[in-house]
Image 1 (cartoon, rainbow, N blue to C red):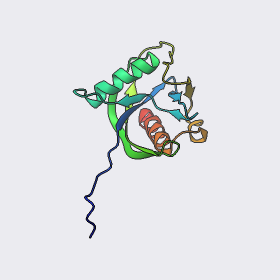
Image 2 (image 1 turned 45 degrees about the horizontal axis):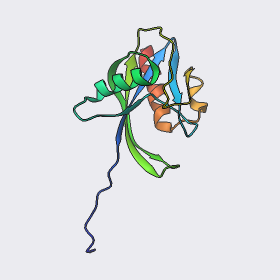
Image 3 (image 1 turned 90 degrees about the horizontal axis):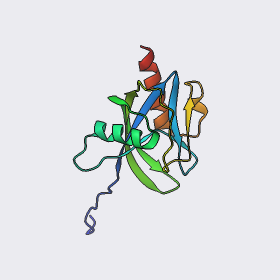
Length: 138
């Protein structure tokens, strides 16, 4: 038995949204040149759904309605050797407002379901996107 006290590792929590409009999912290109879902970290006193609606509007200009949780997992960002706990939600949008990309991302893209598997994007995001496409058809 070790004399060293156990020190738990901590990690941030990030909520992300899958937004499909006109048969295409909204993705944002980050500084690692990966596509990712819009969203971010929860602020003190903020619910996950309120956080996600705020983050998506800040990052894209799109007002959304956040619905159900799609997935959650621990994401290891290998380039930064950092872990983030990701929770993804399905989102609805009624607006036809054009995407406005914030300074947090390089660009926005709208992709079909068939394009998603081939994109440089974490597998957890791909799972969430494909799940929301599937549920949206049901």
